[in-house]
Image: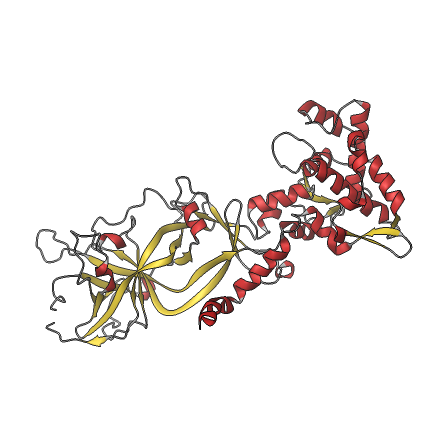
Length: 351
Length: 142
């Protein structure tokens, strides 16, 4: 087999000082499809702002417009070269004849592997990052930031951030630019004003709200920004774009949670009947009958020994975010971390 | 921390026209992956060697590759990398279970952000050359 001479491709190594810098990123099928599509989107590397707010295990992530992948750096002991064909200088004076030549232009010690994210919800990041806007005062101890600046510090995709932003009725003020997370009290006050306007002007809030009606509903003399009212209506309709149509289940649930939070804030709890009455009063005529404490997720509130009710602090956080889906996802990240067990489980059973 | 953009592949990317590798391993930009278990050591680099100079390792040979018959994949099982005059590595062409995006920093000239950090996918590679065996001694004459 005398194939050494003449045949084949010359292989050479660029000296270390002049090597290029590359990173190798493994592409899961879904992501591969996206980046090789006709109109590939720009992806984003993101990481949380401070290590303090990092959920366990959340490091750098890579985001498509609507999905998030965890990045894991996997080192290799092999030498992985990135190679490029080069034209060999025709120095033999043979009329510019070139021979094929492959040059290793960079060496990579690790590969970036991606795994599916993660139970971290954008909501918890927003709650940690945004100043609370309450009827009494807007706390503004933190540096004012725009919405996009806040999103940049959340290691989740734009769509996931946007959804949580809408769900939580967060709003951005224009002058000066700043972002706020409204308190339950602020939301209830704004909702109350919207209801009052709607009743006075004969606007049915259970129907799609036209632009003109919307402007009249949120128009008020109170001292909170109109952005809050808009954000609230968005959060009750559940969409960040398009026309506003309040979602019945969402409106009932969210106003229920917020009214309970607002009422029980002063003394830590409120009598069940007081809460239900207040909640009923906060509903458009047509939905009043449907008010019931059963609409709230069972773990979001509790009955105290004296018969009054209070919001369950831990449960409340999940009511506004996507319901239910967090638990199984938490399990799957754990599985990804302890990949060895998964890898060997199959062979173990077979044996 | 601001997000760092990762731009998709440039559809007009093109490498050097010289197509040395078998078609399967060719990519539009010419980038390919070669993995060697171990490291390449050389005694021939001296202080006199200019920094840009490339170190000649040897030759890459696809003994069973027949350009006329790309459909036949059996040639992928054997690739030789002759190192210097006396050593040969045996390897194979391996399809990557998950294709790899080769990422690099965008050069200021092609970047939309003048001095920002912007990355781009230079190429997506589907196959690699894997040399997972020890080098064997071979005669200089072949």
